[in-house]
Length: 179
Image (cartoon, rainbow, N blue to C red; front, side, top):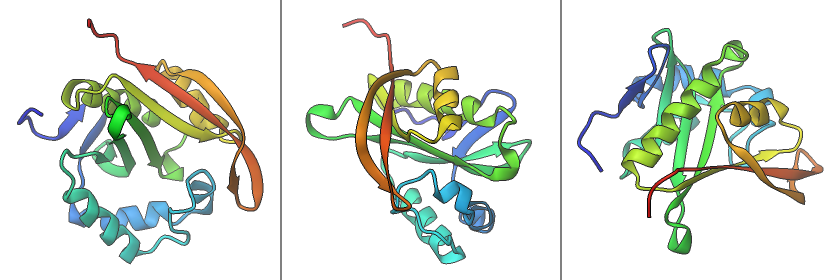
């Protein structure tokens, strides 16, 4: 891993290392049922300041660093992470993100996804990034497709969310690298 600072920007959106002071905005943004509805049940709902503090503390201990703050126009608007898998999947990482509802439909998510994928391929020595999306989360499906991800599989009745059995869509992006 390089010693470059953990801050990447495309001129509009920046991903950077989380700060302890982000806990207030994170708690405010993440305490939203519409966000929780699209994430795994391990995501707390309601989302409290204590949840934000614990999450940020965990992130700051990561080596390599996997979860970042997303900034838009200098303001914290969400988080994005790329999580390396293990064993025979060690060259693969899972992508996950959340954007605060006031910032939806502003083109922030695709920009953040592109930035984190560049980081993963360049700094984490991975060759494949995947994301698991509930079938009803069409907004995330569109984001991934805009970023060049392809639908690899539909896992039928793979998850239960809010008491409903649903399909999971698996999207992936493979880095073109010479062998």
